[in-house]
Length: 157
Length: 157
DNA sequence: TGATCTCCGATCAAGATGGTCGGGTAAAGA
DNA sequence: TCTTTACCCGACCATCTTGATCGGAGATCA
Image (cartoon, rainbow over all chains, first blue to last red; front, side, top):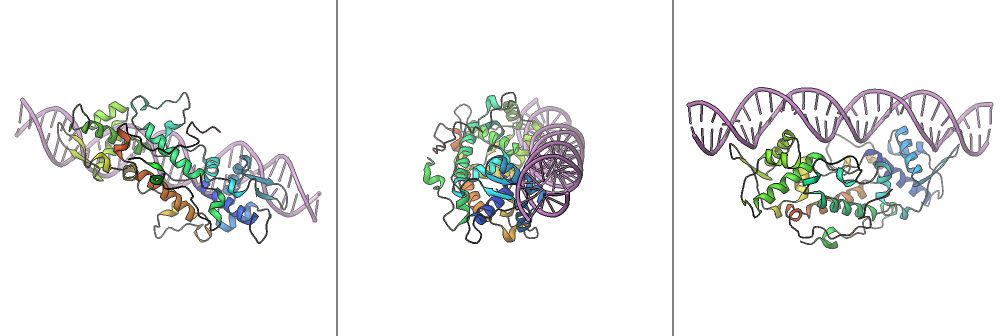
């Protein structure tokens, strides 16, 4: 069903929360720890911890150890795209198996495959969609998706 | 990874094949049976059979029993969208769990969820994308989607 | 030093998915 | 009518992915 994994969901929630604390009006610059997020959104603590670790390893957030430790955005919210977040957790976006040309494993259908090219184009469009929306767009009341609808962008028919 | 299931892949291949036989120049109007498609694309016969049964039950193709039987498109190739095909196999498109409001099951995060609205917008955009491309677009030499993505050459990471 | 927090690897159960099997029913042709 | 061919349908199973858990090591600050 083209579903996003729960881990990625959690990542989005966590980043949104961190961003809104860090750049909010109440306690700007405050560090946020795992427990706070887990309790706020009812996310299993250990699972969320692992998600944040991955995000940290991929450079989306900075971790600070020890008491009073926690996480901070590594970049501005407007410089983090949804695509980056999801791919950071789930790996490269691949709508179909044959899109990442790992040599060695070969698709049984490849020689006569008639849908590869169109699927790759769809995949590109989805990627563009996700890459044009940032964490910043998810927060404030600013319009969320600034990309034009596919038809407006030129689906020729 | 936002992946499409293999069943849906098979459905797309099969429909593309049926359409190209049915409206092709060689043997227009010919009925196509399961075995022919399975052999052409190296798809497990029984699995493909099940996929075609679902497509038939959902009104995308017509089945004809007996010897010389097989499948035909129920509508013109331009009237079948990719979204319809995928949803016919995988059920309603749902990028995230909380998008289909089944009463009874409630999302633990819902009360404080901060990402639901933006995710639903993304889902909408993806749906539009898939619903604006038809089986007919997948076939002929006509351009499919003219959107150019910066990552068209492959995502390196 | 001790309390608190992040970090990291190993592990596990449950569910979805891909794939298989076998017993039906409908239709065409000899 | 009988046989062959092809669709129909439900049960079944192995495997992979996913969500979730546990235990301990390392860093930081009072």
